[in-house]
Image (tube, rainbow, N blue to C red; front, side, top):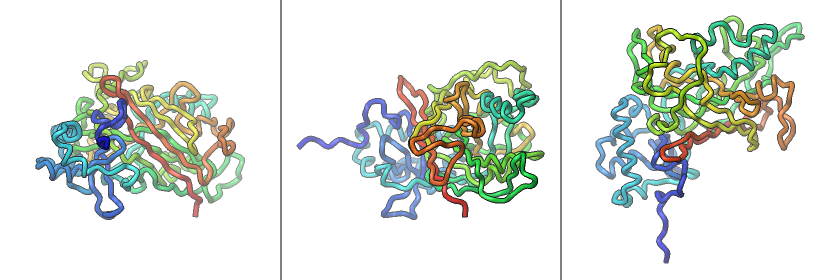
Length: 409
């Protein structure tokens, strides 16, 4: 009888190999209430807490938890030490008898929101996206607002409506008013959209009143994940002057169930686009030792059909600059804070990260197998996937974030 292969014997090039090891929280059908920290390896999830106990690891207290929050708060040294231990557990043959019984097929577990969300901030960091939006809505003026190249523009979102991938999204209702309407009307949004983004998860908090410099990014940010900032464009258009987005954004933000640690993305670091406006010292990253950008390739699918491939490497503002700006006034960080990059869009039409841009606000419908789309219809499913370059020519998979639109009540 041929020897049965191990789940740890992965095919060459698997994007969830030992070079990746993203974290999540899962439960199994036989223990549905028992949420556990898991680490993805190939097509399986390792029960990280049980593995730590089985191997007598000092990190059992961080990993045998129902949430990533204790690990997030433990800090950079602990993050590196735990990652080093996990790598040994899944690669050293002597550990296999202890590790293999603790592996669960990923398609047989339930994945949960892996951390308690503290605050949520969303940015507007793509020059291509901001230019497209400006050209649409200010055709006779400057596409970019005067402040855009001086600071990373952002707004506070609603942490209570951050949901894990796979959660249905109820079509939001609110006030909307077309330019030709004499008065606003109330009802379900008819311009429901997506925003393909990358999110960043804060681990270590900061003191109130103490800004976090650019060099502090790795000390505070644990990892990143895919994010879809659902947007009701018609609600947003009517409400956003003068204080910015509110109900058009706050109804749902979908995040991936997997958080990829920053250490897994060292090979994906890249130089951000050239800046043509001098930056104030707290945002000037020209002297930083480490490139602030990430070469992440995103794919947007609607009902299984790829419609866009936004390149994260084109983002004008980096995650480190966003963190520095977010705290420069003394605002503190908390464990579980997350912030979104803003819509990722590249210079080409097929690289736009929102339907607003892809259809030019409905002027140019997308052709899908089931019919034309300007904005999302009830029953549509949107999936974002992504990968980044890994060490030695590998790929780092960022998993996916998916959501299905359901009818407004």
